[in-house]
Length: 149
Length: 420
Image: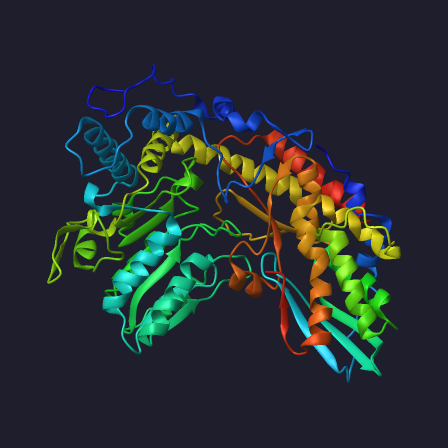
C-alpha cells in the first residue's frame, strides 16, 4: 500500500509551516499551557485570552515539525472568536477526524480538513494533535503541561 | 561446525562472503517499502539480521530447546552447552580473560542498570560522585541518576565541544578523589563521535577510578578488546550487532563481579536457598536470575560468527568509506548542515536541513523507502548542548552501499523541494 505524500504536505500545511499565524506570546494572557511531545521533542506554549466565555485572542510559540506547526497555526485561526463550549466541541470533532473513528464524518472542518491526511501517517498523528491538547489544557487546567504520551 | 558443538549443523557454513556480497545474506533487504526498494539507514537503532542468525534461532528451537542448568536429560544438556558456548564466543569476541566475565542481559540498558544498582549500591555514599559525559544515551544517564539520588551522590557531567567531541582536559579535571566511577560511551549514538576511551580509562585508573564503557554503538563498527582497553565494565546489545533483540552483554572484570551483590533474585542465581540464608551462585550466573534468553544467546553467537567470517576490519573500512562519501554528498546539498564533525566517527551521519524539520525529512525519506531516525536519539542533554531540538540521522551497516547514499541525498533534495 502506498499513500500519497501530497495528502500530508498540502499547500496549506506548507504555507502555515512557513508563515505560522498567531505565532506570538500574548502578554497578559489569562490561560497558558505548555505542550510536550516527549517522543520527538516537539514543544510549544499556547496563550489564550478569554473574556465573557469567548476566546478573544490566541497565540502560540515553540518548535516543531511542519505538521505540528501548521496544526497549531490553523487551530489558532479556528478558535479565535469561539466560545469555550464551541472550542471544546471542535477539539472533539478534530480529534475524531484525525485520530478517531470519524473517517467518514460529515461536518466539514473547513480549512482544518487539510490536516486529515495525517490519518494515513500513524507516526505523525501526535504531531497534529499536540497543539490541540495544549490549547485544551490551557482552557481547562491552565498552567499544566499537556503531553501526547 | 565441529562435533563438540551443541547444535547440529544443517550444511556447510558459507565461505567468508566479504562485505560486497553480504547484502544477499539479509532477507529483509530485498523487500519494498511504499513500493520502493528498502534503503535501511537506521542501523544505530537496530540492525537487520542475516540468514545465519535467523537459521540458528530456528535450529535451536527445532532441535535443542530445553531449559538450561537444570535437567539431567539430553536436551537440557544440549541447551546448556549451546548457551555456555555462546558465552565463550562472546568472551573471545571481546577478548575477555575468562568466560565468567560475560554476563548475559537483555541489552546494554540492562547491563548499565545492573552495574548502577549492584556496584553503585555498595560503592556510592553521600558526597560521592559518578562522572558521565554530555553525549551519553539516556541509558547511561538515568540509571546513574537513580542510584545517585538514593545514595545522596552527585552526577557530574564532562562537557562536549561544538564538534561533538569530548572536552578531554575537562573530563580529566572532573575525575576527583570523590569520583567512584566514570561511565562513558565508546561511540556517540547521536552524532557518531568515537571517544578516546583507552586514554580516558588510563586517566581514571591513574586515580584509582573504575570505568564503565557503553559499547552499544561501537561493537558493530570497530574491533573491541576489553583487556587492551583496560575497562572495568563494557556493555553492548546483541540486536545492534546483527543479532536478535532481547539479548545483550555485560563484561565485568571478575574481581568486580565477584564482589558485587546480586542484581535480581530468583532461580539459576542461587546455590542453596533456605528461609534462613541463601547462598548465591558463582559468577556469571549470580547475575542471571530466571530462565535466560537462550535462543537469543544462540542467535548472538551466530551473529558474531557471521561478522567474524566477514571480518570486522573489512566492515570498519567499508563503513568508513560510506560515511566519508555520505558526508561529502549530504554536505553538498544547499541548506544542509552535518551535526557532529569529530575527527573520528563511526557509522553515523546526523544532519539538519534548513527550513525542514527532521520529522518531515524522515517522513519524506520514508516515502522513498529510506529508513532513518529522527528526533533527539535518546540523547536530550547532547541535543540541548548543541542547541537543536532534533536531528535526522542516517546510520550505516555492513550491507549499505554508495548507491543507497545517492538515494539518501536525492531524498533530502526532494524534502527541500517540497518545502521551498
